Length: 116
Image (cartoon, rainbow, N blue to C red; front, side, top):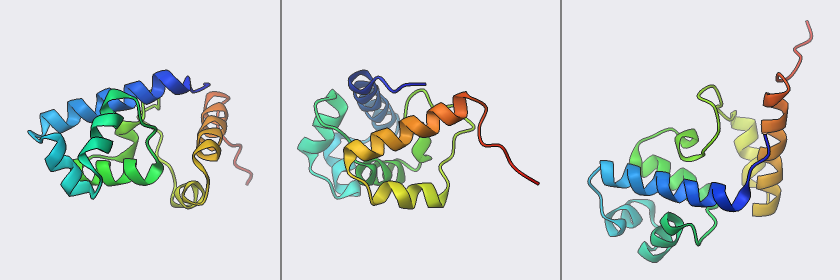
Protein backbone atom coordinates (compact mmCIF):
# COMPACT_ATOMS: atom_id res chain seq x y z
CA UNK A 1 0.00 0.00 0.00
CA UNK A 2 1.33 3.41 -0.94
CA UNK A 3 1.08 6.12 1.67
CA UNK A 4 -0.82 9.12 0.37
CA UNK A 5 1.49 11.49 2.17
CA UNK A 6 -0.52 14.71 2.53
CA UNK A 7 -3.79 12.94 3.34
CA UNK A 8 -1.99 10.63 5.79
CA UNK A 9 -0.48 13.64 7.60
CA UNK A 10 -3.94 15.18 7.99
CA UNK A 11 -5.34 11.85 9.19
CA UNK A 12 -2.57 11.55 11.79
CA UNK A 13 -3.52 15.03 13.02
CA UNK A 14 -7.18 14.02 13.35
CA UNK A 15 -6.20 10.89 15.26
CA UNK A 16 -3.99 12.87 17.65
CA UNK A 17 -6.75 15.43 18.23
CA UNK A 18 -9.42 12.79 18.87
CA UNK A 19 -7.22 10.81 21.26
CA UNK A 20 -6.12 13.96 23.09
CA UNK A 21 -9.74 15.03 23.56
CA UNK A 22 -10.73 11.53 24.67
CA UNK A 23 -8.10 11.81 27.43
CA UNK A 24 -9.55 15.22 28.39
CA UNK A 25 -6.33 17.06 27.58
CA UNK A 26 -5.84 20.49 26.08
CA UNK A 27 -3.21 21.06 23.41
CA UNK A 28 -1.12 22.87 26.03
CA UNK A 29 -1.32 19.95 28.47
CA UNK A 30 -0.37 17.44 25.79
CA UNK A 31 2.51 19.65 24.68
CA UNK A 32 3.81 19.79 28.25
CA UNK A 33 3.62 15.99 28.61
CA UNK A 34 5.44 15.57 25.29
CA UNK A 35 8.01 18.36 25.72
CA UNK A 36 6.81 19.82 22.43
CA UNK A 37 5.46 23.32 21.88
CA UNK A 38 1.71 23.81 21.95
CA UNK A 39 1.96 25.45 18.51
CA UNK A 40 3.61 22.27 17.18
CA UNK A 41 0.79 20.15 18.61
CA UNK A 42 -1.73 22.53 17.03
CA UNK A 43 0.05 22.33 13.66
CA UNK A 44 0.23 18.53 13.86
CA UNK A 45 -3.49 18.33 14.60
CA UNK A 46 -4.28 20.70 11.72
CA UNK A 47 -2.11 18.68 9.35
CA UNK A 48 0.16 21.63 8.61
CA UNK A 49 3.22 20.12 10.30
CA UNK A 50 4.86 16.83 9.41
CA UNK A 51 5.28 14.64 12.48
CA UNK A 52 8.70 13.20 13.11
CA UNK A 53 9.02 9.72 14.51
CA UNK A 54 10.29 11.28 17.74
CA UNK A 55 7.18 13.46 18.04
CA UNK A 56 4.88 10.51 17.36
CA UNK A 57 6.64 8.43 20.00
CA UNK A 58 6.39 11.27 22.54
CA UNK A 59 2.70 11.75 21.78
CA UNK A 60 1.91 8.03 21.94
CA UNK A 61 3.71 7.81 25.29
CA UNK A 62 1.87 10.85 26.66
CA UNK A 63 -1.48 9.46 25.51
CA UNK A 64 -0.52 5.99 26.76
CA UNK A 65 -1.31 4.31 23.46
CA UNK A 66 0.72 2.12 21.09
CA UNK A 67 2.57 4.07 18.40
CA UNK A 68 0.76 2.28 15.58
CA UNK A 69 -2.57 3.75 16.75
CA UNK A 70 -1.34 7.14 15.49
CA UNK A 71 -0.55 5.87 12.00
CA UNK A 72 -3.57 5.46 9.71
CA UNK A 73 -4.08 2.52 7.38
CA UNK A 74 -1.70 0.24 9.21
CA UNK A 75 -3.37 -2.96 10.23
CA UNK A 76 -3.79 -4.06 13.79
CA UNK A 77 -1.11 -6.66 13.23
CA UNK A 78 1.54 -4.04 12.35
CA UNK A 79 4.01 -3.55 15.14
CA UNK A 80 7.44 -2.21 14.25
CA UNK A 81 10.27 -4.21 15.71
CA UNK A 82 12.93 -2.60 17.83
CA UNK A 83 15.40 -2.90 14.96
CA UNK A 84 12.94 -1.16 12.61
CA UNK A 85 12.48 1.67 15.10
CA UNK A 86 16.25 1.98 15.49
CA UNK A 87 16.59 2.21 11.71
CA UNK A 88 13.85 4.85 11.52
CA UNK A 89 15.46 6.96 14.23
CA UNK A 90 18.60 7.32 12.13
CA UNK A 91 16.78 8.45 8.98
CA UNK A 92 15.63 11.78 7.65
CA UNK A 93 11.89 12.37 7.45
CA UNK A 94 11.89 11.59 3.70
CA UNK A 95 13.81 8.37 4.32
CA UNK A 96 11.41 7.40 7.12
CA UNK A 97 8.48 7.75 4.74
CA UNK A 98 10.21 5.60 2.14
CA UNK A 99 11.07 2.97 4.76
CA UNK A 100 7.46 2.77 5.94
CA UNK A 101 6.26 2.51 2.33
CA UNK A 102 8.63 -0.42 1.77
CA UNK A 103 7.37 -2.16 4.92
CA UNK A 104 3.77 -1.64 3.81
CA UNK A 105 4.54 -3.02 0.34
CA UNK A 106 6.14 -6.10 1.90
CA UNK A 107 3.15 -6.57 4.20
CA UNK A 108 0.73 -6.17 1.29
CA UNK A 109 2.58 -8.83 -0.71
CA UNK A 110 2.38 -11.37 2.09
CA UNK A 111 5.34 -10.47 4.28
CA UNK A 112 8.76 -11.97 4.55
CA UNK A 113 9.40 -15.60 3.72
CA UNK A 114 10.86 -17.35 6.73
CA UNK A 115 13.44 -19.93 5.76
CA UNK A 116 13.81 -22.98 7.97
